[in-house]
Image (cartoon, rainbow, N blue to C red; front, top):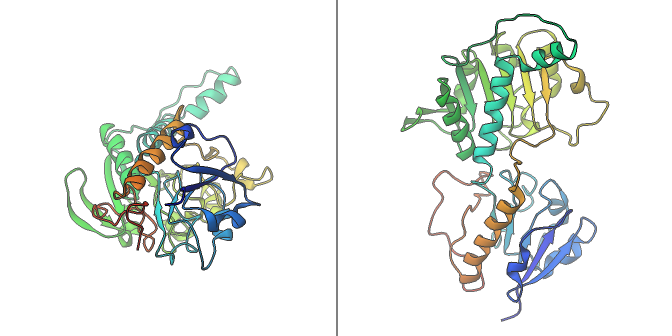
Length: 336
């Protein structure tokens, strides 16, 4: 059996790869060299998961990696080009970002409800101005995305006494934590009664642009919108108009249609909009967590065991109850 080749697309050093010493040949690539190296790789680790290079370099036929891992929750930068590669398994970082993103969203909700931004600005001006703020307990939130991250956000909001409606691809009438999961078709009705609308949905053709002028028009003037999903979920000009015309009270964006956000983007200057640079899941030590997750899955691949976090390429995400008996992709039993 030939030595396994692990190809790493990276823009920065990857921790803990020394665990593969003597077990695999590790080759590094950048966006310029990726295409020529893909045919000789058994495993592709897309450490630079913000790059679109894999999609552009992926060979249409011939030899190609049997396993592609992205250390991100979303896999939209790999699809649709890899969707038809039946001999290639895609896995993602499901589970690593759940709690950090939930904490970040919780922080945003509290910051907007309690007007921390206004407090900091008044402090900077040395002005003593009493205000009344929004009570979070008893408010209502719609969380769009019923996967692990969405559910963790929902749990965090429930702990604050928020009434949570969870929205997923399909409706489920019973749910042990949230009572039920609403179908996406119910979203226009749900947002009309929500104080907080949080988007953490996977990016699919159906979810792209779901938050547009019509959706913002259905929200209450007191409502706040948070997007920690993908920038393409939002028609950004429509959000700007909704904020400028006071049709919603405020918004926070951690993801954008173009990243990094250009310095001349009008988003920077919109009143009531909080901008952060795609950092909601990045806590101290997160790179080590991602590396450990990949290496643990590599152990399974090497032994011919089923991989964790296998993405359904038709759906674009890991199903809530993925098939545990999926064929292993490693040397002991190649993926059919």
